[in-house]
Image 1 (cartoon, rainbow, N blue to C red):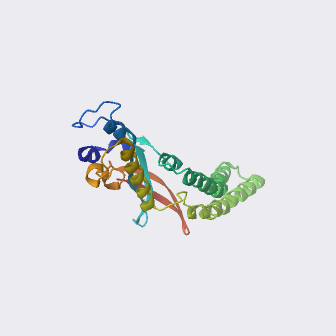
Image 2: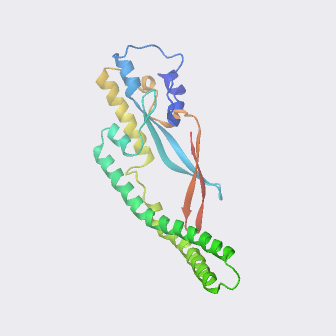
Image 3: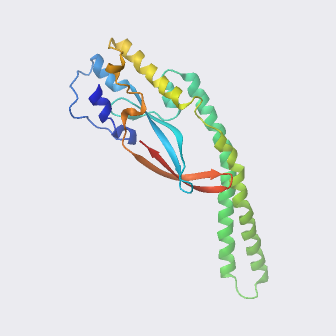
Length: 225
């Protein structure tokens, strides 16, 4: 299994591959069933473009050597914890409910600002009524944009994962051990080669996103490796 784990990189970024050098196993053999159904995880980190600080941002999980993604609650279902899956979905819904109104107001404020500026730029001399309306729209946008960002801040405090990253790794490890036992395979650390741990060295993955902060909003770079 060591050669398998060290080369499972592409599944983390959504690719499927046949790993060269793996011993061939019959589709119904215990070893092949384990290779197709073990749970792998890898760490993800978020880097703020302004401060450069890097913080853990959860894990990415997949099933088997072909890297079937197990996002969010799917991971907890896969390791046999429907209670944690239900908690994840509930927390995700709460986070969305807190974020959407504020983000909607912020986006509306941005639109209002540009609309007001456009109205001012296209107003003809002497059209005092149109210019006054344009100024009011612009000022309303200037107020709504930061206000929406502030209203969305509570969503940041809601972590959809009901357990910590070490506990997620433990859940995957326990699942893999139980799977090997059910298939009649050895369950020593050497035989398992810890496929559920983040030492699988997956291929790096970068993602750019928006990060809200008490002082405003900024760009964030998510790194997965």
